[in-house]
Image (cartoon, rainbow, N blue to C red; front, side, top):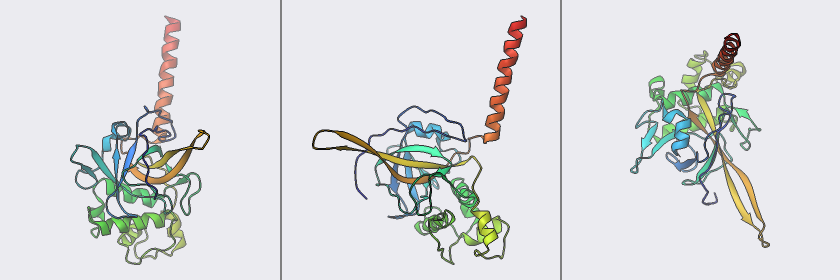
Length: 262
């Protein structure tokens, strides 16, 4: 991976199908945590980004979120793509969405995460994954690697999965196939179905690289770095958002009618 310094700047849009324009300055710094090339990573979100994701509501102190010596909060996350990369310590532009974007071994533009990926990450972020799967341990590099491997398999980034992966039994039970095989095509289609909820999001990470040619011409190029998971429990689902918007418009209509009759 090429090391480079990037300016902290970002805007996050598209939460639950409705664009939310945020103040510039929202960003995230990615850091290696469990493994050198894959597994759990720690994401350092600045104050603007923290506000937009409910200040890590739902994450558990000491298990899925941490505070460093400077008082900065970090949260645990996992990669969705096998062949996109970030440089630990660099800052990245963030777009919050429901899909992996560009790159990846099996990722087209706008590839929604699977229901099983969303389920596992929600349980992880809530600090409950070790309760639903006793083989998992927080702050364990081996457990984190197994979770990362399962996520990559669920997202089609790899076609092989260890027969000893600790999440096999959990997913078979949770998705109604206790005692069945991971090779059952109907069951695989069930767990790989697109997630349509609103609480597990994707941080699409990009960076802007500046180049200057020998004539002094400046070119800015967008680089797609990686897609990471984030938990936003306070985000309403799309149906609620639309319903509230409808009620708001109805209220404005009633007020206008009353004013006309006054």
